[in-house]
Image (cartoon, rainbow, N blue to C red; front, top):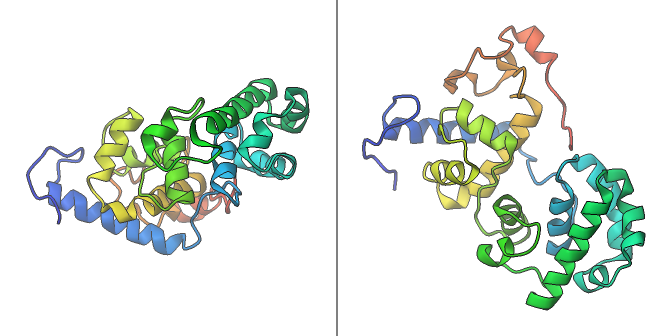
Length: 242
């Protein structure tokens, strides 16, 4: 049921109007990006968890190029937990910060073995208690590996949530809760994908392509970037996976 109480909204519109506008934007983005999904490659919850931790300070493209070798050699938590750090470092070298990433990956695998019998837990408190796993990573795993509703607030999601007038919050946890109140729980995972895909392809941090944006008419920040349709079209980034 839609909340209709007149709580303050970032744009000054009524709460009901904000909810309706937010959900309409998400419907349009769903039509625009029918293939939206997690852009890290994985086949198991363990692979997604490790890949997400490795993706810090690098791109999904590099992670996706590196993890097939990693997981072929260390397909589960037990094998990675027992790995020689030097061997893992050599695999992760292309990612940068490879020594720190090696310590993170092995430490994470060891914690999974010691605390959860090598299995990835399905509860947010258990996930965020693992070394190197924050709330964003936990929601990625819960939503995409287990189908458990969660909102993933990365830099793209946070930027778009503010530009679209969903919230004025800067703190990721506060953004997560504020935006979550506008949508049914069942929509949270795909909403995360829609905003992230749109942020990577159209609503860029420095120069958004407003003139080529499918939701510009409902966006209070319309005009912040390039408004000319021809010029804006040149700014579009086709399906980057990083």
